[in-house]
Length: 197
Image (cartoon, rainbow, N blue to C red):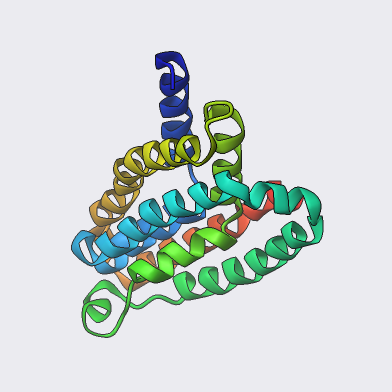
């Protein structure tokens, strides 16, 4: 991979990873409700899960999507339903003091699996593999793109979880927490608008 191509891939990975989307909004809510330490498996699941998904997309799933568009459409329906469920869970999350005892942030495997129904993550991976994988490099090029994305993604998503922890004290009031959680839930649902439009 040339330096110019690698630089372009890193910029794309940073911009697409750090901008608002389902992963980042869920991490902010998780940081606010559960704290940074309990959100670490969620962050790792996103970064490594997205890297793995990107690798698999790079070695052949893109061809499957092209040959069978109904699979892509099915994923959009599943994604929409799952995002609605997650938005409901965020909107009804417990107060931080209660969350320590009873609440459960997403696990590593749940966050990794979510990448497959997250439209932003899927499109990020397809775009990265389509534009930045070195031509005729096969699985090695797909692996390079996936590893670069995973390495760039972790610090990017960590900012959102940390941001959630910073507003945690302010959210100690139940009415503020409720307003924050409902706002995050609405924002999460709003991420579907450009995908479904």
